[in-house]
Image (cartoon, rainbow, N blue to C red; front, side, top):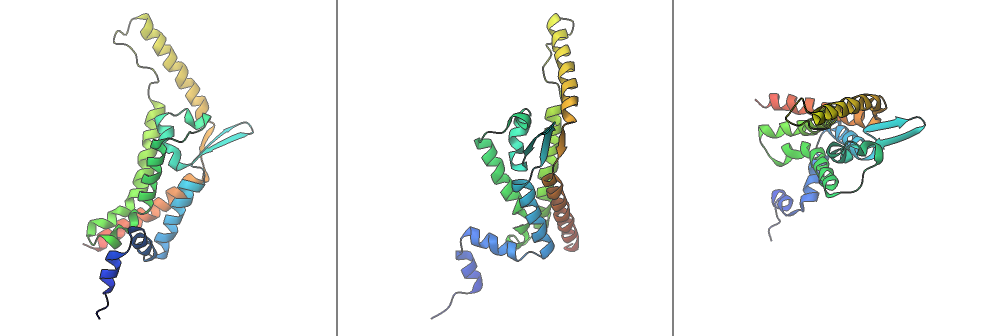
Length: 195
């Protein structure tokens, strides 16, 4: 009776088992960087709001809710489908470094840059959402409503500058950023080695 080859057995394994095996085959620094991402994104605060003795933290997987409505940074985040989907995206990005194990192509090494790209993209998106105009001015710039809206935008900008002094990057943000940089550097180095 023929025994199945190792390749046939691996094809019949569930996808989760193959992913776990692929993670285990990564080198120690890659595994450590992936663990840093998991802890930084899911268990530690990425942003911390402190108002006097009150402190409120937001984790990275909640960032989609904060980007959609920046006031959620101060008033808490409710569970939504958007938040769950962003959580799954975060998990997929953490697992992106297993791509070279599953896909034998030189371009697969660029998957190591995906977590850092998500961090940078989310940061830029949050910055653009919080630094733009809060109220849209009407087409007629000399109307009373345009002046009222301009006044409201100026007032909101002053308030956001005051609020920004109370928002800081938390330990999870730094930990995940370091993990993302380490992974991106490894992926780019290995991509260049495969030329």
